[in-house]
Image (cartoon, rainbow, N blue to C red; front, side, top):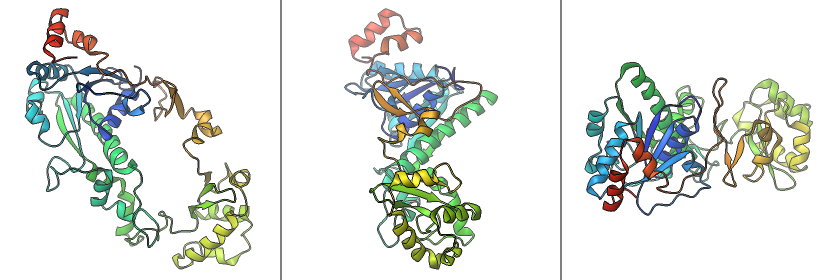
Length: 376
């Protein structure tokens, strides 16, 4: 692999959601990621979260497997695990053990609630974590129940990407000081941090603590989505005065004095009704022809089928085909290094022998581990 993390080795203890996403981010940018899978596990080669990996199968119930895992971690710059607090310790692979083996190790821990606190041992999912952090409360239409934003905010923004940032930060610290450390990445903490600007608006008195009535949550007429005559949607984000003026010009509303009250929340409802009626008079393509690539701050709302075909995404190669499946391309991009085209997810256990050999295990020892069922 090329990329700015070339030369970094990460051991990933297999999990779901944010842990694999973090590992994908690191692997996309050049790190060697070795995934320790469980016996009987399966990876779908079309899954972007499992791309760019090597796969080793270890049965942690077998006596010799924990020793192999420790050897892997001795060879690594960092590890990622997403189990409930205490699980790795019970396996004999807790931070005290692995950092004693490898003092430079960055030990990344991904959980929903964190390693401590009243909820730490409870099960949960993205929707629960962003509920507790206050984020979900502000997502939805006025007067209606909160709407889960898929699992983008907790699992991936506040979880996987936050841990990737933490891993790189701690790897830089280890490179400078020789000191490894443990990262306690909780999706509650991470999703709260994603809402930093919202908390700022609240502190400044510029935000009501309810959904669908504020400037950026669909309350404002100039920052929302609208249905077109063909049933498709467009998005408008004309916040700044010059962009709002251009919106009025393009839509023929410059002469309507009602739209002078852009920042008066008491007028947002009536103005939104006018825009709703107006945008429903033309197709999405017609509105695109009028406003696309202008400073209106406009874009069509594209489906997953449409997005890879849009000329802007095509020009930037924002999507790639991996194993016959369309996937988002690695991001961001660099001027001095290149992110490789991703490799599809491996067959579980396909790299066991090769990875163990890289640790210095000879064929006889590898065969013994297979015979005992520790490695597969």
